Structure formats: C-alpha cells, structure tokens
Length: 360
Image (cartoon, rainbow, N blue to C red; front, side):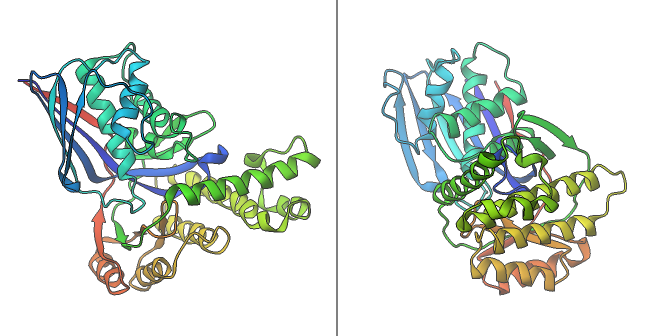
C-alpha cells in the first residue's frame, strides 16, 4: 500500500504585517511546528479523513460535485482548484491530519494545512505541470485567497511553502531567501480569539481608501516609493479616519527595508533587528490598533525579562507574540510571558518549508 506523509510548518511574520495586501514586501520565516498529513491507499472510491486534533472525521466521494462549497472547506476548495490543473482524485486513501500548531493563534495553521493538503494531492494524483515550491505557494494562494475572494495576502502560503527566512516581494510574487539565522525565538500564545478575516477586510479597505485619496491629487503616487518625509505632504488630503493606517503603511515599509538591509549582512546585529521589531509592534499597536491588553502585557513581560525585541504575530485582536532573545534568557522569557497571562509559551527555531515523502 502506498503511504504519503506531507508536512508544512507554521509561520511567523517578523516585518510587514498588514502590508502584503498593499503589494508591499514582508519578512517572515517558517518555524518548527507542523501540520502533518498521513495518507494510506485504501482501494475504495472515497477519501476517509480523520482530523485528530479536532476530533472530527468525514468522507469525500469521488463522484461528489465540487460546487457550492463552504468558504471554510479547504479540503474541497483545494480539490476544485487542482481539478483545473488536471489533478483528478480517482483513488481512495485513509487520511490522518494532525499537528502541533496552535489553532487560530496567528501562526497560520490553516495555511499550513492547505499547503500540506495540496502537496499530498499533487504528489498522489499528478497535475499538468511540475510542482515547484513557487507553484505550490501559488496554488495555496489561489485556494485560500482567490477562490474564496478573501482579503488576505500571499505571505502565509509563500512562507510556509519555502520555509527558512524569506523576504517576499508580494507585487512580483518573488521570494528572496535570507541566509541569516535568528537563533532563539520565543512564541507566546495568548489564547484570546481573533477575527482574522474581519480585521484584514477592515484594515485593507482603510489602507486602499487612503491610497486612492492620495492618488486623486497625485496620480503618480506609489505607496512603495513613499518615505517618512512624504507623510506630512500627503496626510492633509486623507480623511482623518484613514490617516493612521496610511502612516503605518509607510512606516512599516521603511522598517521592512531596514530589516532586510541588516539581515543581508554576514555579521547582522540581532539587537538592531529586535529594535526594529519593537518599532513595528508600536505601529501595529498605536496606529493600526490590532493589539489587545493581554498581548501588550505579554510583549512588555518578554522585554522586561531580557528579550531583544517582541511583537504581535498575525492579523491581530489576539493570537500570539514572538520575542527574539539570547539563549541565556529564554527560560526567563518563557516564564515571564506565562506569568503575564499567556496560555502557553515555547521556544521556536527556523524550519525548512513544506515537504512530502512517499513510503511504499
């Protein structure tokens, strides 16, 4: 019996939160928490799926029409997308889905699942083109964003597919691998719920409203070419409610560029990266207002225990934080984050990207 094992990592955004939907770049990395799909051929006319962590199971028949799919049914949405690439499910498998990525916590467990699922389907059933890392990322983006008409960007799908530390040019969908190793990172899980798509939709709409208001008077304006000195020029022409998100877009873009420049150095300074992360969190907290008191308390606790930098991860409203630190301080930082009210805190390392293995 054929057996496939498909794995995809969680991701951490270090710089560029709420930037990719404006076609601005991000810096992110895969970490050593995974969604794992184990699939064993069953000689039946269905896929029998056991979602262990959710204590759920379901059966997908080959003859089932891939229409009127619920927007959260990534299994069938991916099958629908892949069908257009001649990936046709015509053999049965018993499938176990498991993972150790906190759910709804800003670490992109859903995108890790989507990437691992697509990777398995293409490996098992083929398609009309070679499955490169770039193609995998684009298929996951098509599944999660384009097919669902979602407000999200492409950071999650590309970071998880490629792994390591990357700078993603979202306008060109081009990945630049950064060789820097950030060493010890601590992830703190708040346990507070978050509304990913609602937050994304609101902030995306506000950002584009601000940009369009500027473009009416300055037709040649490009957000990615603006700098901090330009803010005072453009702000008077932007409605008050959109000014903060506009300033954050420019400020965070500048921080991402500074971080890229630093991380490309052979002897990059981790403290400088930490300082830039702290500034990024300030924009997310004070301008985009996506944090909650518990998140800010966790960030302050990490910094007070010796972290070099700390910030919220994900769309906001809850989720996780990440802290950079020297190895000697990691236990103190983990305990400080827990004492601040986190339901969990753990060490994370940079991870390779998605991979699939056939075992016969």
